[in-house]
Image (tube, rainbow, N blue to C red; front, side):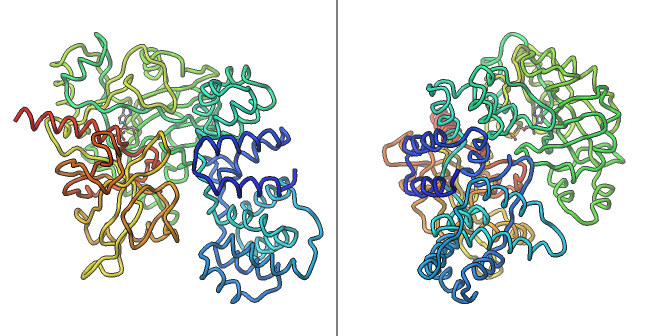
Length: 585
Ligand code: AMP
């Protein structure tokens, strides 16, 4: 398949943000693509070459890309840098430079999707001495044969700046329409995606074997399952209203969620956002195998830092110390952890996703050999408000955040948030100032002691219907000198030249970021705002929600994907509760 087909379609996609149009264009592309190339194309439109959990990164630095363009078109690096500075998009610069060249020479060979994909894959595998030169050679050889339009998109994929604004949901709609003729079949495709997190793999099955095969899709080891999530609940009373007669209450620990995949001696760990985090927890890899009484299994647990002398849980931020490449062994002994199991999704060739919670819990109790290092999360079957309240008290006294409440007959609903699991946190009770998880979209430079840093951040919520990030507030309090430094280090790598197309804001920021980082925020009140876009029109036409006196709690929720941050609907719930409390007062 010629790469020009894809490039032209990408060009069309860049020009629209309308979901229906994007879906139609995608359907057209999928129908034109030879079946065996479907996964490659599905990855490429998302700007990746393998599913995210595999951690295959292209990671090309701009400098290297500029050198490669220069080598390919035979123009000085300086000229390319000037064009880039003027335009702000290296993809377009590549295209401009190739145009200059093609006025004098002819391209030799047409480039194909296969060739681009294989080259990108080879580049991603290169490391160590001499790898930079080799990468440059590969890139310039591709650019040699590329048309200006192809060059633009090759560059964008390489740099990770291809942002076509296509959400996974749109890709799944398009797969359903293109290969089954019915958009409703998207439900089965989504289900397969939720248990594998690999849209490429799923797309190949739909394209070649059809929807019936997709319906039979099962969990497989080392392909992470998208986590089941909980709804918030405010009080014990509300819990009783929502739950059946009897249900399970578990301690809600404040740590890092981990999905443990075990096959004989191989252990792989995935975070909540499905990043492979095995490298940060060598102690789990070394110890967990023998504590799990099965050769094959997929388990879910919460990793919590502890004080080894007292056995007390420590704040979840302590786990940050594990996020490093060097001297990790020191961090492992300085910051010990416990692994607290709460679910089993697969064991010994048995897929447990459809089994009810009560059965999964029994299996878990059978398979986990408890020790100081690995434990089961405490669970109690409860029926009434008093029992919930007592157990909540115990959980808080044990240093936990609150309770998770789970219906006994519910299957594991991968990738969905719903009322089969409820979370009750202590601080929610009778308080206005709930915490929200918000995405950093922009910043303003600081003054005084904050000069050279970002003094104030612009934050957004997540809108799952539109898959975008509407603004909600600016926050400038709650930061320590240390956290300001840390945030600067993280955020300065996410700066974009202009506002990302998924960011919805009328504010002007000094800098804009890729929406990738989630912070925990508290506030005194939710107000209506003509400027902010969160929950736009939900209460009043033309108004969104804003936070009054927002404050950073100190928690960077690095384990959360931006799509897991608070939504307009959640803010609406808090707003309604606040109004109710005000009326009662
Ligand atoms: P939140 O991050 O506030 O949305 O709460 C959900 C998170 O709580 C999950 O992703 C887990 O990391 C964590 N958690 C702690 N204890 C449990 C439990 N008993 N069951 C399920 N999740 C738990």
